[in-house]
Structure formats: structure tokens, C-alpha cells
Amino acid sequence: MGNKTRETAVANNRRNEGAPDTVALLKAIADSPRRDNSSYHEAMAQARQAFEAAEAALGRPVRVKTKSRRKRNGDYVLKLTFKPAK
Image (cartoon, rainbow, N blue to C red; front, top):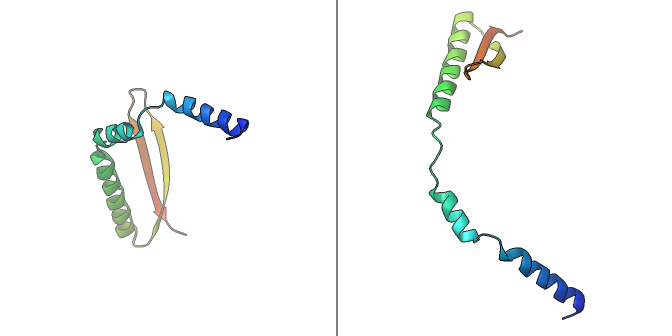
């Protein structure tokens, strides 16, 4: 083994000394609790229903304009405006 190769091997070993065990890290990630996305799925279902209702009310395809903002109390507001497609 040449000097350059030996120096690189020693540097690589030092770099991995403080690294966490990969298997333990992956196990911790797999065992962590899952995020509850039920509110997101409910909101998306309501948006799809709003599209269907708008198309039925206008009798043709629609285009949508969105406006969003965060209120002072932390609520996130999304406004959907439906107009007939051109």
C-alpha cells in the first residue's frame, strides 16, 4: 500500500468513528410515529367536490383562482374562486 492510499484509508476510518450505526438509525426511523394526514385528505376531498359542484352549477369546465394567507392566530386560509373556462 502506497503512502497516499494509506493516508486515505486512515482518514476514512477516522471519519466513520463518530458516525452513528446505520442499521440503528434506519430502525429508529422505521419505528418513529407516522404523521396523521387525515385533515389533508379531507381538505383535498372537499376541494374535488367543490370543483364538481362548480362545473355542475356553471354547466361547463371551470378555471380556478387561488388565494392563500396565514391569519394572525395561525390559521391558514385558502380561497378558491371558480370561473367558467374560456
